[in-house]
Image 1 (cartoon, rainbow, N blue to C red):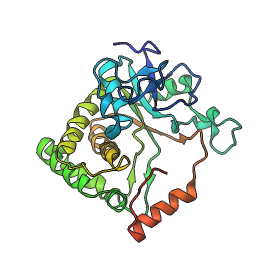
Image 2: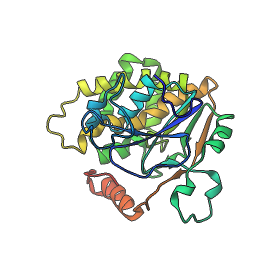
Image 3: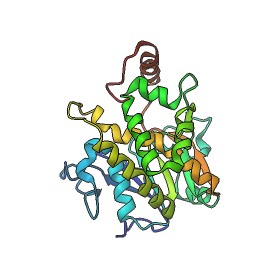
Image 4: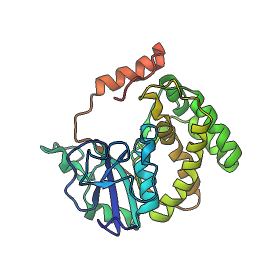
Amino acid sequence: MTTGVNQEIVVAVVSHKPYRMPADSVYMPLHVGAALHPDVLPDWVQDNEGENISDRNGKYSELTGLYWLWKNCDADYIGLVHYRRHFATRSWLGRRARDRFDRIIGGQELAQVLQKADVVVPNHRNYVIETVRSHYEHTLPAEHLDVTRDVIRERYPQYLATFDKVMGGTKAHMFNMFIMRRDLLADYCAWLFPILFELEQRTDDSAYDAFNLRYPGRVSETLLDVWLSEQLQQGVRMVELPVASPEPVDWPAKIMGFLNAKFRGKKYGKSF
């Protein structure tokens, strides 16, 4: 199935509600969870068309959009970003922008970046006083990572040492944001989704509220670098880009939530 937007580069902007979209034609608004809320964004591309897992959006969040792209998009380069989180043009760094959407990278600049990269990811996050694992277990149920490790050990034992290394590190590429060559995205999805489906099968989430039900999506954020580390060893080229938000980020709330989780044992109950 073709997306009909840009057959060289397609960057899906996933959302579950109406929101302003970037004007550049490289961006494709994608309604995630369309099977659950079909009337919300009827004029957008829907993630319940073609082969899909749209009805699992309550657990998989933006990953229902990723799954749709994997199965239904034939662009040479395929990307996933969020309505409140985009890749930024490098030219805005160090200066103010009246319109925050002016910070979002355009298709022409992105094409230049992709001449030197097979994968584009956000600038890494450095937890400094936390490892990837300890941050997860301080903010969310640690057993998710234990089960995930078991699945990787059973299904992809060649990735186990890398998984342990990533979990023990302090840096990670987060947000489930990336742009990849189509064949790499297919490889990543064929590796990622069986892990998450098995994690779901082995997790009793019957008592979870809506926030905690989104654990497959959260675990996947920790897995990108596991897969990516193996690809970099095979010569895949990676470029990092800054991240731009169309809305002001509430940094005091994010920092306080981070510190409360680490030092007071207060797990996250909402997104920041």
